[in-house]
Amino acid sequence: MKPHVLQESNWKTVKDESFNIAILPWGATEAHNYHLPYGTDTILAEKVAADAAEIANRNGAGCIVLPSIAYGVNTGQMEVKLCMNMRPSTQIAIVRDILEVLDKHGIKKLVILNAHGGNAFVPIIRELSLEYPHILMSAINWWTACKPDGFFKEAGDHAGELETSCMQYVAPDLVLPLEEAGDGKERKFAIDGFKEKWAWTPRRWIYISDDTGVGNPIGATPEKGERFLKCCTEKIARFLNDLSKVKSERDQYE
Ligand SMILES: [Zn+2]
Image 1 (tube, rainbow, N blue to C red):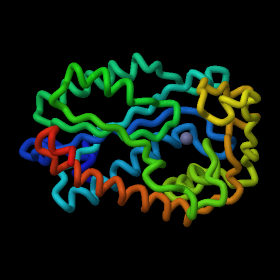
Image 2 (spheres, rainbow, N blue to C red):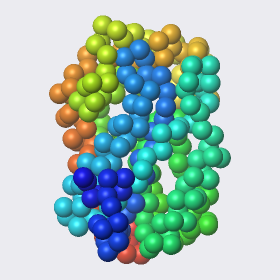
Image 3 (tube, helix red, strand yellow):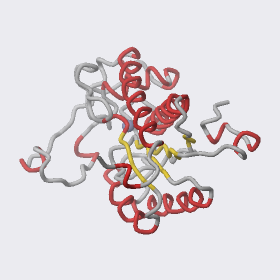
Image 4 (cartoon, protein in one colour):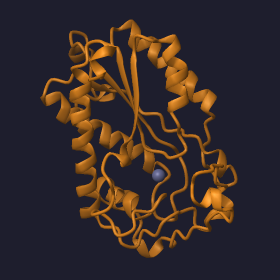
């Protein structure tokens, strides 16, 4: 039992505890090349959230990890079998309901720990900050906490070396041998603005990848995954400790 993970905790532990920060792991349910499970993003979000909270709580951060949301924005993958799309408007409704509960129980900080590139919490937080100005909301894309250079030869974007290495470390039983994987070859945009990423439009998965992967997983090893996850988790734990000391919104600034 992990007392900092609500789903594993109990009333005896929770009722007298005062929590400072709620962490909401947010993943997706989508195809990840041939070799990684549909739950990859959710599994990694839960792992990083639980480990970072455990480290931060040793230094008195007072984190509680909420049950994760396993549905992400996958509007560009509607043609890919059983990619489970959730609209941004549904996501905002979910966050709003969660904030109502947290507010009632005196938890004034929420960290959304995101693991899926299609989820965008910036507009959601901006909008909800008008309704809950006294709750400090933030979001982390966990894989951006540490730069992948130095950890991976070619990190990849979706089910590539980075994600595959992390899953080989966290959930090896759910990862097929790499011989089963496709090469994750991506067909890039033909228009320069999109290719150079200063113009943006969603990618349509049926056109960009044959095996649903973006990035070659061939160089993945569990050791690489362990090192990268450790780097990100420790950095996020330090962030949680910093955040736990914030008493008023002004404290966030120099
Ligand atoms: Zn993923």
